[in-house]
Length: 216
Image 1 (cartoon, helix red, strand yellow):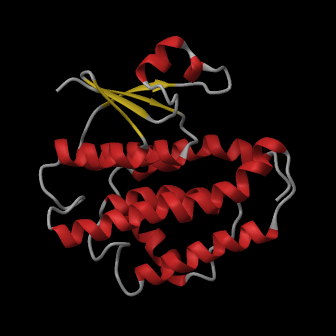
Image 2: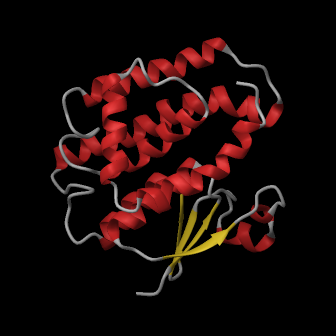
């Protein structure tokens, strides 16, 4: 199988979702760093590839797809040797999907609403938006409960997406300590997700550059 072209920015949590998924599946990615600050995502070539001009984007031998969680599920459907990461059982899969949508629409969104105005527009910290992040983390804590992982007792795509968000939240100096299940789960995923350091921890350091500029 030829490597899949992967257009990405290392500091992006959604991009790290895909890096983690590829590691877990043993899928080779041809990494194509896309410099948003230089406008490489707005080039005619890139817009032809992805009219929405977002990252991450994959090109799998002519099949082009963007939106990280859609990419994750495609890779699992196309290349997984078993259904552990993305169960075929409709009810188990539905729980994984719910967690993915929760990450996109609630957890990561609340973080973005709070953090990115400070990072990119020099906006002051908004305490109400920070409360929304903590509320999302409280939901996540409840979802985990006594389980090992966010969608049950085995590692799934939901963990790979949410760990990208939670590691980003932690790096932005948002306190996780009130959410004991999240803290326990976070340690578990760091220890058990294939290629975690290479796919998430090292790329995350690019994000640290934004954090270090802020007085949080």
